[in-house]
Amino acid sequence: MAQLSPVLAQANPVLAARGSGVEVFDDDDRRYLDFTAGIGVTSTGHCHPRVVEAAQRQVATIIHAQYTTVRNKPMLELTERLGAVLPEPLDRVFFANSGSEAIESALRLARQATGRPNVIVFHGGFHGRTVAAATMTTSGTRFRSGFAPLMGGVHVAPFPDPGHFGWPVEECTDFALKQLDYLLQTVSAPADTAAFLVEPVLGEGGYVPGNTRFFAGLRERADRHGCLFMIDEIQTGFGRTGRFWGGDHFEVRPDVLITAKGLASGFPLSAMAAPASLMEQAWPGSQGGTYGANAVACAAACATLEVIESEGLVRNAEERGRQLTDGLSTVAKDHDQITDVRGLGLMIGNEFRDAEGRPDGAMAAAVQQEASRRGLLLLTCGAYGQVVRFIPALVVSPAEVDEAVGLWADTLAAVLDR
Image (cartoon, rainbow, N blue to C red; front, top):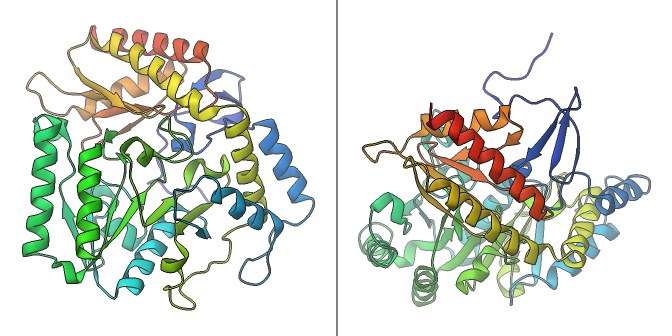
C-alpha cells in the first residue's frame, strides 16, 4: 500500500473536504478560517465562482494545448492582460508551472544575455527547491542541505533586516549596500556578475519588508555595473501586499520580474517577464516545458485578474491588511514574547523571541498548532521558525479579520499565559 512520503508533514492536521472564500471545511464539516491561502496561492479565495466557471468552461473545450507545439486562446489572452499590469518596459512573458521553474528561467536568461556567470542574492531570500533555485535560497538550511554540491556562481549579500541585526532600518540599509559593494570588489567582480535577485518582502525568511533606499541602491548599482535587477514577486505579487506588485511600495524598476502563487487562484502557473530587447537574447531552446501555459491554468489566471480588478481586491488587501496589523499589534502588547508585528498588506508576520531575546521557533510552533485546534489555520516562517504568518485570501472581509484576531488573542492567552 503506497503512502505519502513521511517528509511531507502537514502544518495543520486538517483533512480539507471543501472550501469557499477564506473558509475551509473538514470531513466532519467543521469550519476553519484559512489564513494560509495555500501559502498565498488562493488569492481570490477558495473556489471563487468566476474562477470555477472559467476553469470548467475551459476543461470542456481543450485542457492541454502544449504551447511549444500549438497556441491556445487563454494563453494569448493572459499574455495580453498581463501587459496591462506589468511594470514598464516588461512586455515579453515566458510561462512555466512553478516559481522554481520561473526563477531558473530568469537565471538562464540573465547568464545568456550578459555572458556573465554569477548572480548575487540576498540573505533570507527564498526562491525555490530545485537545484539552482535552492542554491539561491538562504532562508533556511533545510531547503538546500543534503544534496551538495549545489550550483556554482551564487553569492550572498545582506538584506536590511532590522530584527536580525538589531539596528534601525537606515543603519541596516547602509550596512547592506556597503557589504554589497565589498562583495563586488572582493568576490564577484561586476564583469562577472549577471544579476541581482531579491524579494520585495522576505517570504520564508520571516516577512521582512525591504525599503525604498535599499532598492534604489540596487537599481543604481545594477545600472552602473551592467547587471540585471531581477525581482522575485512569487509571493508578493497580484495584490498580496496592498499594491499590485510588492515592489510598487518601493518604486522598484526591475529588468526581470518573476511571479507565481496568486497568479491563477490555485492552478499551477508561473511567469517570467522581461523587455523584448532582453528576452530576445535568450538562446533558442532555452525556454519551454511540457505543462507551461496550460490552457485551464491560463483561463483561471484570466478570471483571477478579472476578479482582482472588478472586486477591488488590491485595495481590499491594503485596507484589511491595515485592520489586521492594527488588531495583531494590539494583541501583541499583552505578550512580551511577540517582539514584532510587521509586513505589508495581507502578508503579516508575528515574531516570537524568548526572555533572552533569542528567536523562539518552539513557541511559534506551539501557538500555530493551538490556533489550528481553535479553527484558525496559520503557518510559520523565519530562519528559526520563529514567525507566525497571516496570509489570507485577498477577499477576506472585515468581519473575518476581526474573527481571526479574536481567535489569535484566545490562542495566545491559552499558550502564553498558562
